Image (cartoon, rainbow, N blue to C red; front, top):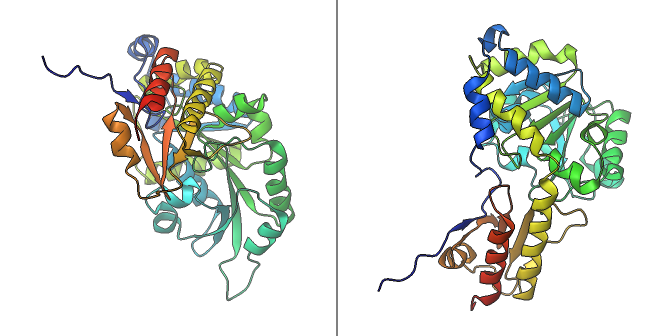
Amino acid sequence: MGKELVQILDLRSDTLTCPSEAMRKAMSEAPVGDDVYGEDPTVRQLEQRTSELIGTETALFVPSGTMANQIALLLHTRPGDSVIAEESSHLALFEAGGAAALSGIQFETVSRDWGVSELRDAYRGHSMHLASSAMLVFENTHHVGGGAARPLEVSNRALEFSHAKQLRTHLDGARLWNATVALKTNESELAKGFDTVSVCFSKGLGAPVGSALCMSQQNRDRAIKLRKRLGGGMRQSGVLAAACLISLENRQRLAQDHLHAFKLEQALKSSGFEVKSALFATNMVYFRDSQNLDRDLIGEFEGMGIRASFIGRGFARLVTHLDLSLEDIEEACSRIRNFKF
């Protein structure tokens, strides 16, 4: 007899979810119009609902979180400016060099502590010799930082410094929903004080595509033009917005994903792995073999039917999401504990 097939448990990302039946139904029934003309009622409904949750005057529906972040940079900077951001931030590392290519800016980075002395060192005043600081970007959750949620005292420290220096501010809140659950607060509290906020509907919430840039009404016309310039003007995009509206109902169930991630963390620790623990952990677990950073963790986990992502510096990542049941997570934990490394 052939070897029994092992169920593949895919924990590479929370973007791997498939649209639910409720989403598919909503998409098929959504009233639509040409959104480039501002005539799609379902998109307007999503933008209004999202701005209400985030606490801003308006929001703009865009295809991706990367586009939302790049529009924010273009809104708040000019070529030759510098932007203060956390080291390993998504804007600096994972957006295909968009900040340099599209906005012509450079980053000055700080650690995850966001200490005042670090902020002072990263700040560049107006000088003919320097790329002057124009903006600060804060990421919550910080995905390379182990998916950690950032409490208000940290973001407020960054905001206080920014406001004192008259810097524009942007919150990369792709997984702000997770941060809200982990910190037991609401989205508008975490977003308060930022000039723009990006949020994603396809990370954790289960929509097939879509993000929003939340902002003041004053910035909306300029943001719409920038979206068009970047190729993000969509037509009958209400079919996508309908799925995003349904996805917002999944916000509170994120606590299950966080619990599942904790179970994986415990299994990895029991097998001798170094785990990047976070005080306010969410749905991501970063781990490595600290004795052998060159070890092929991705290949080994693939061999036992678990798909993980390689992050760098020897770290691999497991991410929980709504298409993984408690039984799936317990099976993954069992495989991790029983595998002979």
